[in-house]
Image 1 (cartoon, rainbow, N blue to C red):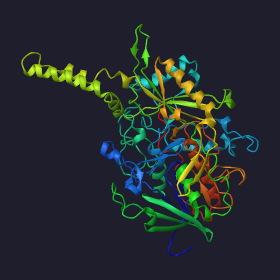
Image 2 (cartoon, rainbow, N blue to C red):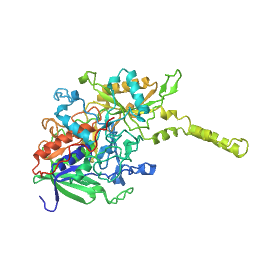
Image 3 (cartoon, rainbow, N blue to C red):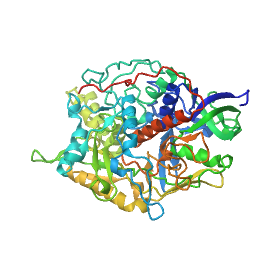
Length: 587
């Protein structure tokens, strides 16, 4: 060990669903842990909402941007990931669904198979339980006031019933606090936390504002900074933000990590010196855990591959987008009262996702590769943008209002109350009220490959065409939902150009039984490189089907147990209580 380097038992790169879980478990076991997160911490109230703030809320340090959203654009695929303490939990839609038991498939990879899962649902079951408790899972309290009137949830349930799929509709567990333990759910109540969170700030129960995906300013989401990372910090884990890892390598039985510190960067201004030329801080550790996300981890390993001879040739393989597909319901109507009226869906009210319709996989008694379709709410300001998009109609209504006011000024109209006229300026607003995005995800084919271009940039060879039968079935289900709600369906226009956007990229460092099949084993440890672990979506040998965050976290919990067992030094320390920071209220 170089005495000039700061040394840890484990360095964890990234603070998302894999890195945060590993940090807590290793710190609980008494290991000295350092978490390196490239992004900032986001306490309640710090997520931007103004156009000025949003303009700067993207990640590209080369342009002076150190914000939350990191967008990738490849030839036939776009991706959205996060940069911040808590990783993807800061912008995800909170859904905690377990991978369906029979989709842990074990196909013959040498004879046309696409995936082989070296773990089973039974292996992960106790880890699923642990993660659900730590993340304080609660279901949307649909049976309580005022939640029972949530229009989009009512519509999703009705669509399932009219399609004969009522048994496949559900309110999934969400990492959102709707109620304190033993108390009824009430929006905006102070959350009673057993320990202060790492931000030292007060949080409140869900206010139903639809802002989950752009950062919850009320702390209602049980994101990783409030749960796992707060617990890890209490146990002594060191959390370093704005530290972007650039390179790493094995040396004398350890792992050496170099990172750039962005804490002194002037946001909004391109740096005078490129990141690659900035001074670097060097650390070392007995164990190195890569948890920078599918794009980040795979990119880092590809970039530093020469330092790891014997690393599996499977690096970069088994990529998929977890079957993500976006659709839009619009102009939905209701004829139940004998006349055609707008069906109010009110997508801006509630958490982003409240319910899910499960179309079963062939392994579960269905046909083809299965998927989920979920309501995809959004911040209320989207409705204002929608209603203001028809500039001609808006100007015409403003002209009528101006004419009415001028007539009053000229004493040509004695009615001085212009409230109704001002209300008319807004129009009927049924366009936004009767529309709702749908988000589907499921078991597309994990046949993509990630690699570096000649200039060192990440590239992905993946095509929607190879999963065309899957996506065709998803579109058909969305169309049937639109018919059930007496509306129309608009597909993501990019999908007609064989291009999709994923918020759930998976693969690149897949698990396998041998190095000929995967980059890491079923415990997340890299073949031929003891002590090097991968703990994020990159380890998936195929799609999870439902939202992958719970499965990523459960795998990380399992990986942590293996790392602890193989650690060269474990200092006994009092474990955390097995009770979760939040427990399920009685609802």
